[in-house]
Length: 148
Image (cartoon, rainbow, N blue to C red; front, side, top):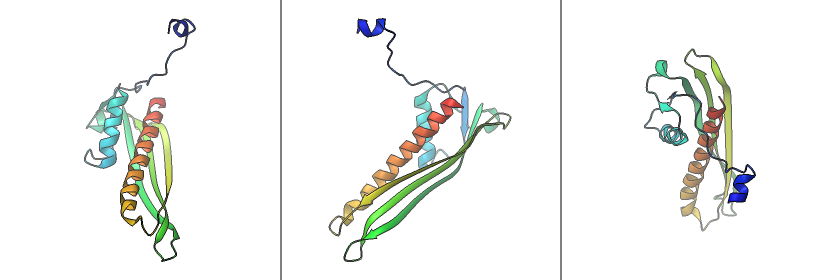
């Protein structure tokens, strides 16, 4: 450990957000709103501000859209290949409504292959994949907030 410390090596830590407060356009009761608020608290450096006029940054989630598309069927005609997606469109402004982060689009897709036998677990797998995509989208948003 002493050798690594002497060469200037340092573990990459998470950096806190570069502003003191942020307002989020989503209600706290929504799944994404709650997860986003939690991620911002964990990132540190910024408080969630309920009043947009007092927030240093305003995060507008303009679209959160989930999609489900059947792209293949089994021999018996049941859905086999399913493509699920999540699209999140957002932008960030400051107190004066000047754009700090231009309108950004995060589009995520996951493919799920099932069979005639595995129809039950598919619903659970889809939920898991949607949660995974939501977590990835929130991680990307927080990363971009750090840079704004």
